[in-house]
Amino acid sequence: MPAKKLSEAEVTTLLSKTKGWNLVNGKLHREFACKDFVSAFGNMTRVALVAEAMNHHPEWSNVWNKVVIDLNTHSVKGISDYDFVLAEKINEIFEPFPPLGLSGSGKASDLFGV
Image (cartoon, rainbow, N blue to C red):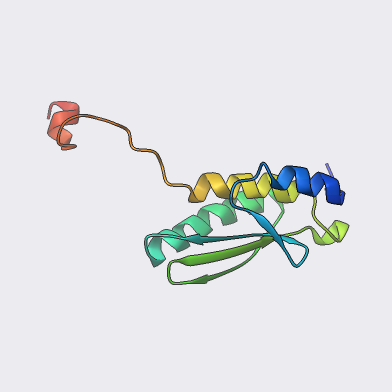
């Protein structure tokens, strides 16, 4: 299905529901600070796999633990539904996993009786 260019009103509505993203220079924009370079690059690699599967690629940069991402859709010359889908997937990748809340020491012997 081809990308659908969104109106200004649609962008405003979706932007209010998309955690952490804002509009900068006509693009969806977000910056992430990770634990370190390996975490930042690892998350970028995970995003790259999703973006490739969608055939929708971000503009981004990375300096040590910081990742800056801009999204827009060149084929529609603006922001499309694809940008918001990818933004949500990026949020899922970069958001830290919630703690499991397991009791005990966290040692394998406590978890698996080994």
